[in-house]
Length: 421
Ligand SMILES: Cc1ncc(COP(=O)(O)O)c(C=O)c1O
Image (cartoon, rainbow, N blue to C red; front, side, top):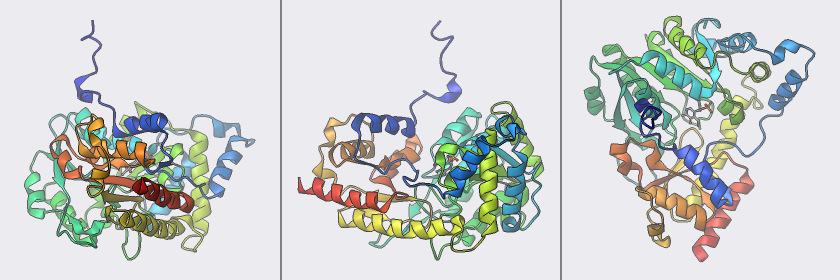
């Protein structure tokens, strides 16, 4: 009886993801400051929630009913208007875009829609943790390659973490189906350069591999870095599926609207997975995101346009949290994009008795104890590595800085109080 109703082995042992575990930790420990999960603690641009309020109370009853399965028409039209000039080709809104339940849903549709039993998928470590689970669920075999610092020095940044191209090419073979790229990168904050993307693109072409490019932090790139979409490199559109997120773009992560775009023949598989799982995503939220995109496109490239102002706002928040962490004993890796800072905590480890925590990995023990004693929640970096390589992440914790300045200042106060104790 019990075996009959076991968890299907494709879901592994069913261990809690770090997100499930740390949200539970927040409820239990109630840290004074949550710099764990990646979401803003300040309001979205006011036109965004206003659009949703208007949509849900509008006289048009259809705006609260099911919409087109593969994406609400007004939203896919606007996504096509947004991305066509950025990609340098006319994107067909009906066949080359899928809107679904967050970038998470888009990743799921892409991986389940393309990976078959035994297919190999190359993943860069550290990685957003759901990639591995989704690949395995599809019957695929993840092949990991770690970004590593090219040299250790005081002023290291995310750009100093690089791939070894010989090692990378050694992972490609005729079994390789997909390469997963994430730029700007979570948790490292690395923004891949054109040169780095060209190397990856060349290998994808040489071995006839599909590139799944997770670009949810596309607007959060700090000068002088630039976000380059790998789909714009020569002959890459044909083999690239790009993922975006309205939650990240408009600072409304709870809305869970995401999308994938790419050539119709590749998108078709995603649509099939989506139609058999979600079928159609929330209409009013899609309509509100469509209106929000129109609003921003009407003020494109002005200083007020959120797609540009958010990067400026985040640059000063990054600098602020980076300074606070450095001043208080962490060795940081300041990011060039995204909204997380990696910090080596080992110089502070001896201030805490980690033996009271039962976790296997040191960074889990540190972040849990640190939340209890210092009152600040961070995420253990080993969560972003495969089981075999978790040791590579154990010295680091990930701190989110898309928070009000007063809360970043609270981090400084809490750290100082904790160190004085
Ligand atoms: C790299 C990356 N991809 C995808 C997602 C999921 O985005 P969404 O909330 O739109 O599902 C996240 C969320 O943190 C992320 O960091």
